[in-house]
Image (cartoon, rainbow, N blue to C red):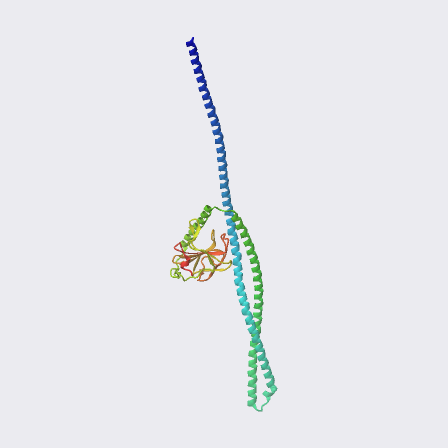
Amino acid sequence: MITSSFNVIQVFGKLISCLVILSSLIFVDLSMAADTSNHKKSKQQNTSKLNDVQQAIAKQESNIFKTNKDRITLEQQLKNDDLAIAKAAKAISDTGQKLKVANKKIATLSKEKQQLGAQKIRQERLLAQQLRSAYTTGQHDYLKLILNQDESEKIQRTISYYQYLNKARMIEIDKFKATITQLMQVTTQHQEQIGQLKKLKVNQQQQRKSLNKNKNERSKTLASLSKKLLSSKQQLARLKAEEANLTAALQKLTALIRAEVDLMGLSKLKRQLTWPVKGRLLRSFGSRKQGYLKWKGVLLGAPIGRQVQTIHNGTILFSDWLKGYGLLTVIDHGNGYMSLYAHNQTLLKSVGDRVETGEPIALVGQSGGQDQAGLYFEIRHQGKAVNPKLWCR
């Protein structure tokens, strides 16, 4: 009986142990199920966040693309604005030269008119004196003198005197007529020049209005560009691309250069050349430009419209708008030497023109997107930029 009860107890204990193990397994399964559920939720949340980040990146990339696309459009508009300003400024410059010529011609004609007027008065006085003299000595009837046979020698002298006076008077009358004709011509030319001067002044006023309008358009374009801000990396890439574009253009120009005997280069002219424009130094050669990029020339601050002069004689190789440099002129000085003049308002010379030392080649501006007026100036030898301070003083 005791043995039987003991067996029952053992069986019951094993049953309880099995229940405990089963319960543990059920609990483990429930825990694992809960963990799996939490993991799925966490994974879903992370996936959702990742999607949000990817969407944000895609949106940012889209914005960057759109910004760059907008910048391309705006930079093209800036080029058009710069060229329009250059055209108006060139017209004003040409009109200014014509005004100088007209004023000079008017001054010459005025002086000539004054001289002819004074000459006319002298001739009138001389003729008056001759007439008075003829009248004074002409109390004798000319016909009576001829018919009078008395004192023939005296009469002959008197007749010769009459003839001399008459010939002198006719010469002076002819001179007087020529003076009157010339005076009338000069007076007509003078009036025509004054009329031309008035027209030129009206044209210049219209050209200035056009220039101001183009400047306002450019300001709007620059304001729009300033809103499309670039990161430092993008700015560096842009500047690098612009420098590469300039280098490529110079390499092409170098291939087109024909050696000219009278162009001896700049090697013997160190510290002897004059700066192309009077102004303060804003950026010096070799100073930091952006990132690892350095200035390959100098930036000289000067007022808009001031004349830019070539540092030495040479031939115009390039005269056009270039991205990042605006209206640019490049001059070949021979023996591998070139000088560059950028950010001009307008260009006064064309490709192929020969220029002499100190000759005006452009007007100071701020083309190419500059926010202040000035001239960017470089000297290069065999395509490599050199310090302009070694040549200019």
